[in-house]
Length: 84
Image (cartoon, rainbow, N blue to C red; front, side, top):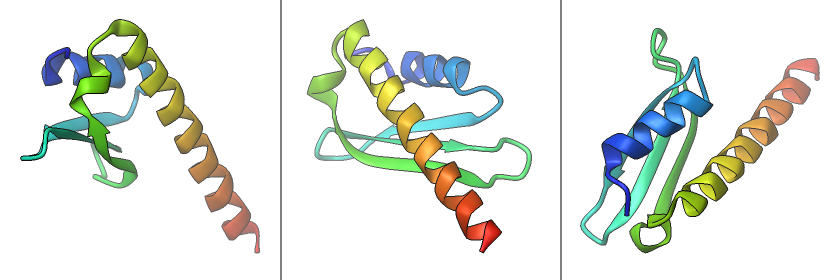
């Protein structure tokens, strides 16, 4: 597994201007939170990511793609709510 600081740096690089927090729980699962650094508004929290599945650069790339999809889905949902 890559270190959490490396994972956080990669996520912040790919999701700038959002900030990122990564933590590992007692069951060795990772939680990722993407948020606005100034306002603190949270855009996405994903929990239960397996530490075992984040061992390779390819796995991290897959995670980034999945998080990007989730963020886009959330923003589309928020925009349609605002239009209602």
